[in-house]
Length: 298
Length: 322
Image (cartoon, rainbow over all chains, first blue to last red):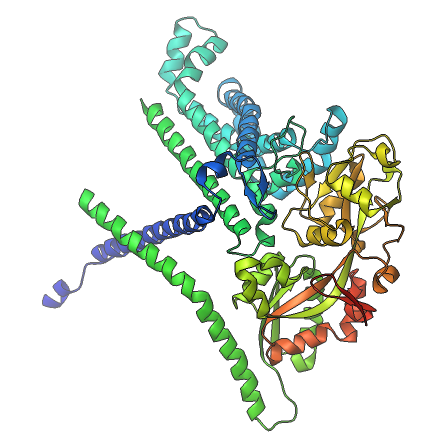
């Protein structure tokens, strides 16, 4: 009898093993995230201890010549490039993605769910270097022939990115539309509304926060994409006068120069500062998404 | 609940800081270990009275992606040799800056670079370059390259300067077709660009609005071949029918002109070690400069063998006859 009582019952042991294992996983996750934030922040902030560099000039300066004499660290062209490219990409992809989601859930659920959705989700699995290469080989020559300019630039970058973020927007929109309660739709039909009236008077307004969540997640994915954009955007550190002129984004300038700079040099530190800006923007996007998600529950 | 959450946050933060503080020390530790291992292996061999000395150890070579294919190919042949079969050579890319940083900090044994270390480590870091020993394994020459429709096959230094500083905007101003000039440049930090600016232009240039910057030679060639009015520069091994290589001051960019110093736009390919290399690394570097590699792999991959050069040039560009 006594021996039996001393042995810990198996389900209690299991409980503890499970608890400790999950706690350890979470702990490592949090340590990793904190270390990364700390690492990027400490490297990025070191730029601002250099003589002649301050935060305001860094964020609003127009001239980027870190190896020039005197060196200039103006990151505004990259910030402008990143924002215009990703917002333009969302403007192209959002109508396409949301319409595809409506088609899949409201208009032809059978065909849409079975064939269209897997095809769109396939787009998410294509490596970004493939997108970049297709952009450079097909899109850039096309834009160069049709529009004045070099073909390379924000327009090409935004188009490539819009295809890349289409799956994100479509999947989230489709899930939101499918999760809408049937009573709302049935009520609308019972009042004599047509399908189209139901879609744009009832369904779209109710699911708007969730649809916007998808769009914001898409923008944040576009904001962080480096390789495909770098291949088609031209990488000149200037704010362009047209959509078909060479310019840079935060990610493209980092990937372009990081390997060629020695760590600790002003140029290298300035690239870390750009990474810090990039990371802070990602946090802002995460907060926007959280805020939208809270609204959608109401 | 809230209190325990706060406690957790505090613990996490301490660990994070500790981890970060620790990480700064680790590179030097690991390299210390690595150095010890290598030297132990070497000294152990020396103590043995055996006549056939089998070197043992591992070599990490990091840096220039332009030099990577050559080092990789040579390292494979090196490891296949029976007397070196116990040596492992690892080759990584990452750029000249990465290579120089890692070798200076002792994280890698060899730092591959297409630029002199003195040109990368400047001002406060200048002392880092002094500790590095240069081993030149090849020469890469570059030519200014234009889109075939431009209709020019010779450019003077002054014309190139005018083009790359934006003074000349259209090819017809210097005798070409009526076509706007499109610059296809390298990033300001690139070794290829520094070489081109130093020896072809004689000055550094700023990034002009509208200029395209590409990192890889393949993309540069593609863009020049396709974009009307494009000009850029490429290593000789990348030249083909799709683009036109122009003469520089009337001198054609071919190996013979580079070797006897008539054509100035070229750069050494460096493999740096921190201090004099240990036996294992030295064996590999000796192999890289041996005729076996110099006359085969180096030529095959489009570089010019360092041994063939009739002139030599130092970091300041001073040329001496060999």
